[in-house]
Each structure stands twice: as structure tokens, then as C-alpha cells.
Image (cartoon, rainbow, N blue to C red):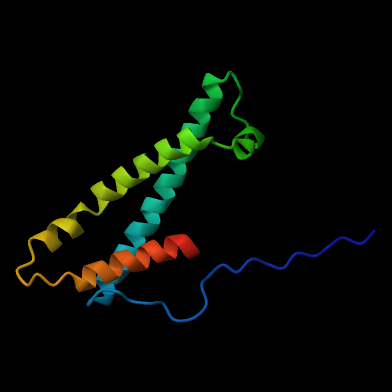
Length: 122
């Protein structure tokens, strides 16, 4: 019986990296913060899974954690927590936009649309 060889995973994105802000350094910093927020969100979900397994009297083994599938109310609760975290982390962007004397929100709105679309396609 022959074993299937798996194609190695791509570890970096192909193509040029898009920039959204005027300063490339600011854009890089925003990307780093966004990536860290994503990692924290994953960790919070995993901690929640540990807690829910403990309440159910199960031991949080790697297999139990990976097999856990949250029901709709749990997903809704997690989504609300994620939204609140994003609001706290990115509050400075919306506060700066609200205080903008130019009233030009198109760059901010385009940035938000881009992040929203990346979330749905990625």
C-alpha cells in the first residue's frame, strides 16, 4: 500500500503585500497588531474550551480540545467577546476618525471594508 505524499504547506503569502496607510511603517505596525489580536482571540477560544470541558467533567486533552464543537449560543458569546476586544484594541482608530477636522472618512472606511472582506474570504 502506497502512502500519499502531502504537498508542503505554503508558509508565506504570494505576491506583493498591500499597503493601506500612508506610512509603510504604520501599515506594518497595524498588520502586526492585527495578527496579535487574531492570536489572542484563538487563545481565548481555547481557554474557553478548557473551561467548558472542565465544567462537563472532561479532561482537556489535545484530542478533546480539537474535537470540541461549540454550539450556536457559545459561538454567539465568543463572537460578542471578539467584537468587544476589537472595539477596545482599535478604539484609537475610530476616536481619531471621529475627531478628524477634514471629515474625510473614506480611507478609514476603505480600511474597515478591506479587513471585513479579508475575514470573509480568508
